[in-house]
Length: 364
Length: 146
Image 1 (cartoon, rainbow over the protein chains, first blue to last red):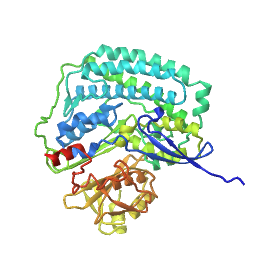
Image 2 (image 1 turned 135 degrees about the vertical axis):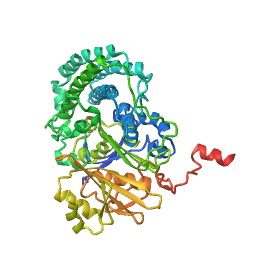
Image 3 (image 1 turned 60 degrees about the vertical axis):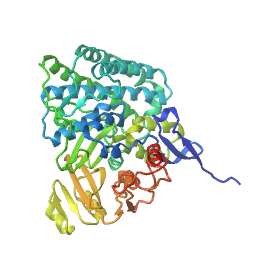
Image 4 (image 1 turned 90 degrees about the vertical axis):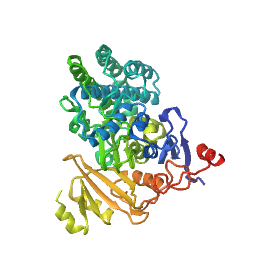
């Protein structure tokens, strides 16, 4: 007599398509996934505990490592906490520099995602194309900050040096739209790609909201939610948000491609301003013996992987009493429990890939 | 949000800064708020181990409809709290993190486990009474040998 049995499969943490060190414990019936249990924590560095033992300026260089593909966003959050606490308003030029770098960082992060996602689906060449374009952006970041990924360029009340090499940015934004057209030509209408993404990993609006999903993943499920509109940093910039109603992996891909195009337009606006602007005027806060006044401080930003936020409680000491990070990927990983149940194993990697999970952000 | 109606329902709640401080029944409060107001995302639950030894939980609710944030906070008497994971699935993840780092047990959430810390780790590192003397860590070992 045949008895129905299920078995457990360990996916990761060393599997190349798990974007770092994600471990999924899958229960399978044949090739069908019955349940999925994500196991995180392989990259835990204790970012929150570290903060309690460091002064703010000591902590600032470490926050880029929370998400090494979008380091500027986390520097910006910590700077914003301190700036809000010390009641410093940023001059327009500093805002323009920050917006330009944040949006370039968003493009580089999405470019890596496009490459890695296609690699998950088995197409290797888009990975090299995407990295070629990403390299231009990283070279520029290296020129201005000395670092390709861990920039430590934003400081409390301004930026470390005046911005330069604007002709590089001009070159990047003139080349990129054509390259994105090329990606679309080889990816968007590719029949294999369409079969593996359309109507796969459907994320309904209610389910997304209930699971705390934010950012592009939420907007690809038809919810118009973009923090950049209420963000004072982006004041005066013309921003268009991309809301798609596809709800599947394909919609999440398309939303990121379109978002890159919109980010290029924002970079162009910031560049236009910076070319005309005069010398850099900053409101630098002296980081030596910096003590935040007693109280709770909160800052959030639209990061490439969803809403990122930072909470600080200070009792007037030189280090925070409690510091908490909220990152978008943490909720995306937990969504996999729901999203993968009932799918086939060969779709699991594609669906997990489409959510743009990055593990240092999950583990903090 | 109309606080008076809220006050009638839940005795002893008060407005502290930008957040509503309640005494107990967090599950009922979150249920009431989500049923009567368009708060659809529980963005995060923040836990703080206050200097008086009590753990404070701050629930950050957000409405994508009218773009408003609501903070509800509670001071726990012991290490036990009510789970809201049946209302928001995302709370499951937050509660697990708080269990791991603060040792708060959420009644109603039955799959709390060690998340970041190893399974055999003793203590909860973000508590203020946590002592860092684990000899498995190189720097603590050095200190003992000096």
